[in-house]
Image (cartoon, helix red, strand yellow):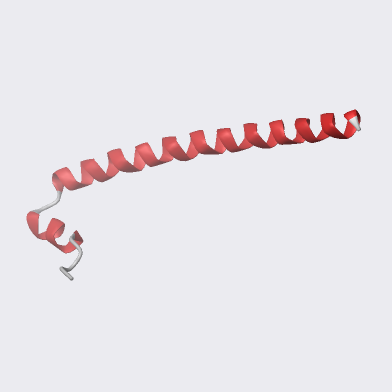
Length: 57
């Protein structure tokens, strides 16, 4: 039973590590996209920005 438990714990640890790495990569990608979005909004005209606003309900 200990062998099964050890194997399961190892598999879970490996999966957690993979998920942590994926979260890190996605967080970095999100930050880069937010910076890019900010830069684009800074140079956009008011008319262009108005087109990005959702219509009122």
